[in-house]
Image (cartoon, rainbow, N blue to C red; front, top):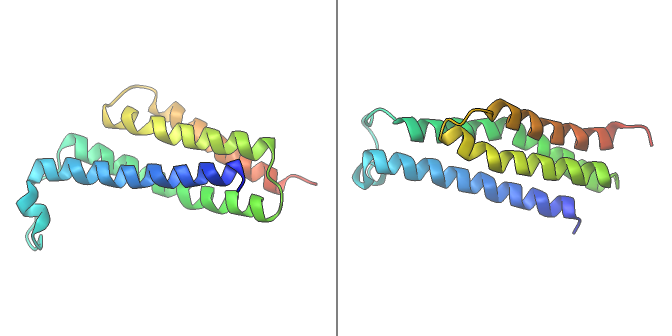
Length: 131
């Protein structure tokens, strides 16, 4: 397995962690009884931390399918190399750092998002550049 596919695997772990963090924050706000029940009635309003974690999760979902496809295409087309390695690492690193920055309202989040997008662009460039 290539390092790029390993990075892709770790990116999926980050996605699962984000799901769990958002769910845990919501459960802490509403209590286990609400979350374990059928949730037929609307629950209490979502709190700031849970809302931020949910938005960070949604933000990941906007680019994750593109990243998955790009890494897999690069692998199948035998276009992996330095560009895809650096791009994959930059994407994963950006996504990991993005979560606490968003959750705690730390300034600089857009720059981290741009860094992860540049990582995705590097993988795409490796696929699309002339051979």
